[in-house]
Amino acid sequence: MDLYFLPMACSLATRIALNEIGEDAHFVEVDAATKQLVASGADYRDIHPLGLVPVLRTDDGALISENLAVLRHVGQRGDLWPAEQETGLLQWLSFTATELHAGLFAPQFDATASAEVKAHARRRAKPRLDHLQRHLEGRAFLLDGFTVADAFLVTVLNFSRGCAFDLSPWPDVLRYYQRLAKRPSVAAAMAVELPLYVAEQARRPKEGAA
Image 1 (cartoon, one colour):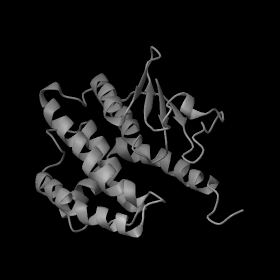
Image 2 (cartoon, one colour):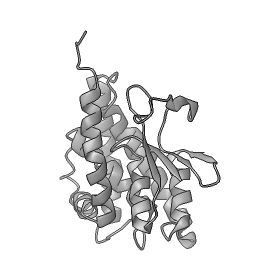
Image 3 (cartoon, one colour):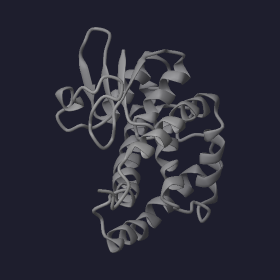
Image 4 (spheres, helix red, strand yellow):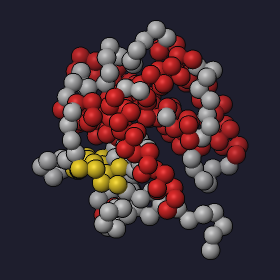
């Protein structure tokens, strides 16, 4: 398998899931600014016209795009997609993708978004995080055990560090994030990708540079 990824982006969830089930893949880094493959310089848009990650190339050469589809494929290779909890999995994966990733954090990292757009996204997030707080109270995971939904949620909650979003008003959400960040599969994935993220940021042209 080949996993096309951006360091510390939502594709991190797939690396976590692969770590969790003990399965390896060939990880192919994409440059966020140029949409080129870092190792070869090839245009990633020849693989995915939108330049989005993750994309998984399976052992038989098929390409799977969209985070939820990739996580389902990987989760079903191990025990991270329990069929009897599929409705709950889809519910929490969709919540994380739409209400948190797209609704809250994507505007914070969008250089074209105004300060008011970013502030509005933060205000709008409160009832969503209130909902997550209520669900996580007294729970170790989103469902009965660790699944790809947790791999995705801890990835998205980690974005709070990059945009100075304070999770402390939601103590159970914060405890969940802090505990899962120490889980071996998560910690190992972050340890690999964080230096790559720092290097990627260093490659970007500085604002105002000629």
